[in-house]
Length: 106
Image (cartoon, rainbow, N blue to C red):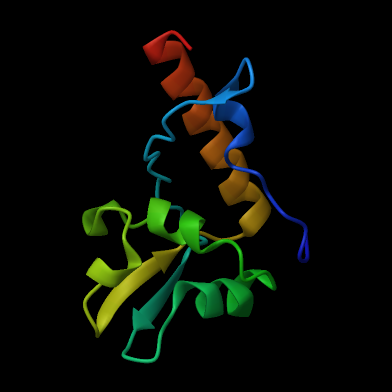
């Protein structure tokens, strides 16, 4: 997938207006990678290391809902889940969008 930009906001634009972007949890898979989040960690760096794309930190947060969607709430030394492989994880995210939209009537 390389550095292609994935627009996670596209599905929440209606009539030219942006709706609230919900937190959509990415379920854990056996292929996911566990990474120690240390004092030098940043999600853009982790994203670049595993996806060759620094713009997917948001996806890593979706797979770690216990931190409320904020990178700064991840304690140093924590083992975080990196959804892997990327394409399959994006497909999981898109399935969560469909569930959200069906449930909320969007």
